[in-house]
Image 1 (cartoon, rainbow, N blue to C red):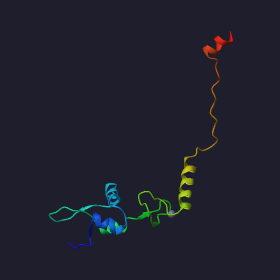
Image 2: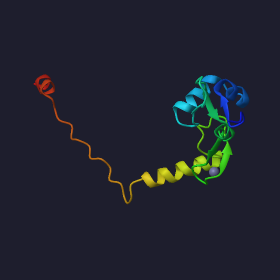
Image 3: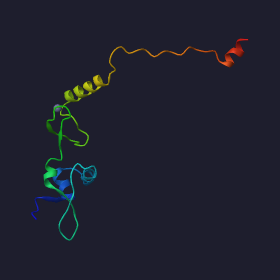
Image 4: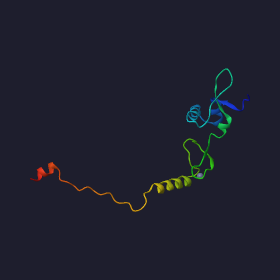
Length: 118
Ligand SMILES: [Zn+2]
């Protein structure tokens, strides 16, 4: 097994410049895979091919691949694309046709009010 295919979590974190807990979180959330090294000692390792694209995200609007600081949070390549996506979503959610205003309930005199009026 070549050493370049997999990296232990500690080395992977150093290589990417993130903390070890970030790597653990990414594994937990399925962002990167984890491989058990085929040796007697089980060291938690991650494949280098996953690490190389760990920061890459596809834009929800145009599908462009871009580098994000927080790959699990980022979804859009630019602010314009984010705004455009939410505008489309808002338009799709808007009811069609004329929206009827809600009918207000008639105010009714309560028992205590009627008692006070007497
Ligand atoms: Zn985009």
